[in-house]
Image (cartoon, rainbow, N blue to C red; front, side, top):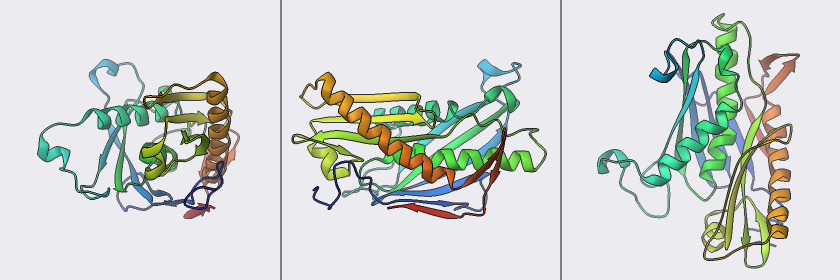
Length: 254
């Protein structure tokens, strides 16, 4: 058993509240245990210069943490005058994950802005952001369809993410901050509902790991992603290629 009472292969309590904000085309509050992130999707006409005239859309992400999201106060990056390397990395990761979920050739020259703001951080902020952002993005696409702006809901697949790591001699799923700080190996996995991999980030902290350890981490992470996608599926009804919102406003996995 882990310090918080979970089994090695057990996720924290996961909760998603949809339509959390009034104004964005899609928004959720996602919680992985004590980690809480607001994910908001805004849709704007136009695309970056490299896509102009090509008739397709784009997805980009921004990520930030409130100054006291963690155990100590951090200076806002807007005040410090630069965005840190970790923030850049996470923003790119969220953007890449969301671009695997949508057929951007069918949304016209529009940009979907994914804003992920961490209210409270206890490990797994990037994986919570990706898992929640998918629900917000799908809601935004459905809204455009309902308003007659799109003639289809070109969502290709569900996408979710989870962390896994080696703490001591054990492989643990969905690390909290304390476990992440102690981990010899930390891995983040992004995957779709059909079992395909979008991204794997795996690194040893002054430690190497074997192929067998990697395979154990991978299997545990895929099992966690399967559960997270089952949670996401509660928010949608799919009829052929058409996605519809259910009436569910909040869903929990515990």
